[in-house]
Image (tube, rainbow, N blue to C red; front, top):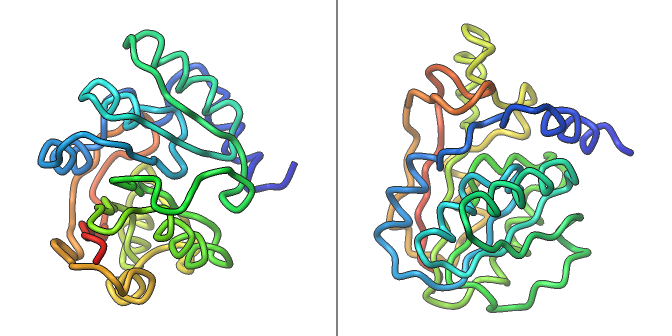
Length: 206
């Protein structure tokens, strides 16, 4: 098992839900503006966002590298009387199809720096024309907030963090409905607590 996978197996292997069981506020707000369809959650972990979408009538797919995350996500789904199609593995190995999804959600999907842009490009191919990307993750400015308060969470490697320019580069064929850097307060489980700097992006594929 590589270090990246082990980190998440250890985090999700604990009894408590690392980021809680309530959906991310930005995801919740944006999802409620869309007509339910087929949605993919990338790096979905313990399933809090996927389960919320399923409760709202979406046909939900998800993937992650953590078996422990999937186990807790399916348990949460069972408790909430919803169904998730949840796969484990690296994105290139999974059997998603081109133009399969109406919406793709990237909520704190901090992939290793060497693959994050290629993953964005692969995810783009899975989204239907006219489909929507919903994205919230820590910005490159977040390190100064992390230094002040480690409890806010997020990667310590600046190359795993995001800038507006990176999003514009990785998703060039989009109408940018929202693309900005914001300072927000997070209260999500044990690992997202405090003030941080994020990039928020809502894009419609042309």
